[in-house]
Length: 337
Ligand code: NAD
Image: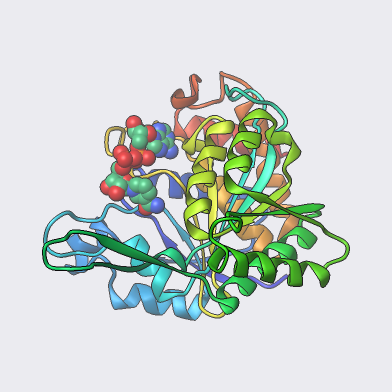
């Protein structure tokens, strides 16, 4: 088995605690990874006076893989969001968020098991906005959808479906109203779907999708959609399984770098107390292991996580349990045996 080098950004706040727990759990699961530790966020400002030092960019360029803890963007001082800069710098065009019911974790639904693939670079989030005059009597935002941007994201979704044994992709849009932009995304989706006859394909209007996700989320397998709808629907679906604390994510970019990260932030209120829940980052690490074809280790890691979350004795406090970061991680590792 090859042993890839992965840039590890521990991050700020609870980042170093959950990163240490995750590295331990990956090693126990048999993951073969060499870590290259690099700085970003507040930790990097303190050490290098730069929230995103050139050495961090160079490491990610070289390794093309990163596992990242949450980052605090320093307020004031003219700093840009490091998360946004990283996404742009490495052209990470697909944001992948799997959402699966976790036995034992309190939530309104059972049997949720779906994946959202969100286009990450275009749409209304391309940032093309202006006032039409100096009096600010109106403002315009331009949604940009390209064939290139749509196709690479939709192809990624189909390839993901094949690799992970997913059966059906629903393309979500508003092409009945936004006939050109959303119509283009839908047309490209239909064209790409013809190349994957083994994966079922349908499409759904975004408002109907929101309703159906709330009524019967178990009917969805995979969703592929544009940036704005993906942003909203992926938080909605995280809410279906108990919230952001257990939600993993991957930012995928073909040529440059793929970056895996928990969805939650730096949790400054509990930083340094040893009680943070590392599940979001651990599940992101399981996605990284899948991505580098270390499937057996990914499965062992997930098995340990599901088992430790099943009991209040071994769950962390944010999920109503009695464990802290270290005892939860011990339980994850024990359950892999
Ligand atoms: P947050 O996610 O950090 O915290 C919200 C609440 O959830 C807090 O009460 C926190 O204690 C709790 N929480 C979050 N993760 C937890 C975990 N793993 N275990 C236990 N409890 C957990 O959101 P916030 O307070 O809005 O943001 C704090 C900082 O994080 C801000 O600087 C923000 O910019 C940053 N942030 C970074 C990212 C990222 O790097 N991807 C994402 C979101 C927010």
